[in-house]
Length: 359
Ligand code: PLP
Image 1 (cartoon, rainbow, N blue to C red):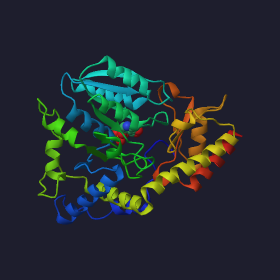
Image 2 (cartoon, protein in one colour; image 1 turned 60 degrees about the vertical axis):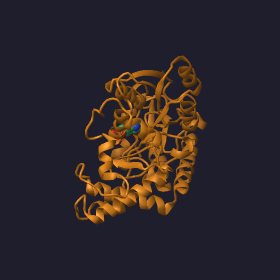
Image 3 (cartoon, rainbow, N blue to C red; image 1 turned 180 degrees about the vertical axis):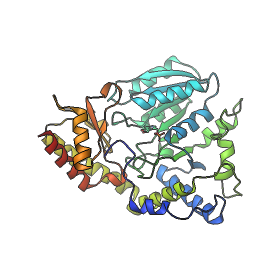
């Protein structure tokens, strides 16, 4: 019950143990088509450029910025936790000019500040923000932020590493232009794969670049030779065959449950965890309307030794909860309720273990 990776179901682990066939084998290519189709449903998009990058969430992030940012491009980046800071690094490393908007950790991105930043800056190419900040447990208003980007002729780049599968992510409905996620949170797959999707407008922007994409591996023009349309698939890199078996199985499981049922399960069990924690006098860092059900940042009670409690939970109950990051270290615990780990049994275990340990 940490901030990810979450527990992987035995079904997904069993799928990973299947024989490793060739990444151009017709059976594997058939499976790739299924993965792509299921990812489109998960992202709620018709985007042709929807695929799993063969590397972790940070590579999905880098795939978005390396393809869309050229030297001199202005990008507004919203930072309200750790991962907005990583976005800023990406923009600057690819030669872009980063206009950074900062909000206090534990609060959502302030849409008024974003509107003001667009009013003060011309020719902004993109707005980038984290939908679900894993470092704080905050959900930002992705729909409104994408609207502001479009009102100002900019692309919307969204981090959905922790949101995808746990809360609504509506790529086409909100007009997201580039989005990346990770397999290790609410999809409950082993870490190491990053589903991404680019809108037609984003694809146009990549095609119209004045300079070559400075990464060979992440260049979307090249990787589409392997993951693109229904045409011939050509070698680009050796796909992580068994990790893709795992993703396929996790996506099948998501379809069996139903996406909306999965969101409802996360919300219901978050409510149960909250009720139990509040009964123990433990409060939340984040205001109720911006709380993520899958990542609960709770305030460590006065006088309690943070590390000692987490160690006791691990040793006595085989239960992991996450520590706070940055300024929140020692002040909060981050309790994950992600994917397969989001169960009634885990909620009860966590409440019982905390109550006994804090007594
Ligand atoms: N973005 C967010 C919001 C994350 O929580 C993480 C990882 O926890 C990442 C990006 C980076 O993903 P990875 O660690 O898989 O590279």
